[in-house]
Length: 196
Image: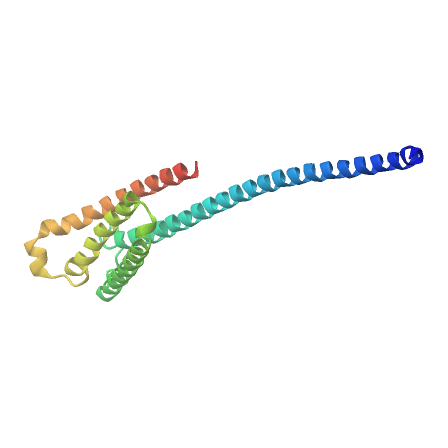
């Protein structure tokens, strides 16, 4: 027994302490691993939320950009129907009619493009943004609707019965251009607000 206590017991104690130390190290490592995994999971979720937020912001910006692009083309083309200020028109009647028809075709196309873009994105933009674009669209529509009667194929009966309406067409061009500037400023402010 004395030999056991003298030689074997120290080995058993050493082995027990080594096993106990290994077990404690394992438990600490597992706790640390769980903590690291929880931190990694939180970091992953945060990065995922940031990614989705950035993706959402990028998509919103793309929508804003496409709406502005089509609306500005619509405004530009429609403003040529009843230009506010000086306008170069050929003296030759055939050339003049050709120019008027080109302007009309371009304005109808850009109006349709802008209208389709606005309608397609109506549920993805706020109501106030939609209304700003829709207001300009309606003014452009009036210009396009009245253009054939007053310029393209002048209807003397209509021209004579409402000379004030023809004047309103030129005034409306100025209004459209003013609303264009208001829209640009409005969208700049909105984008800056959303970026912060």
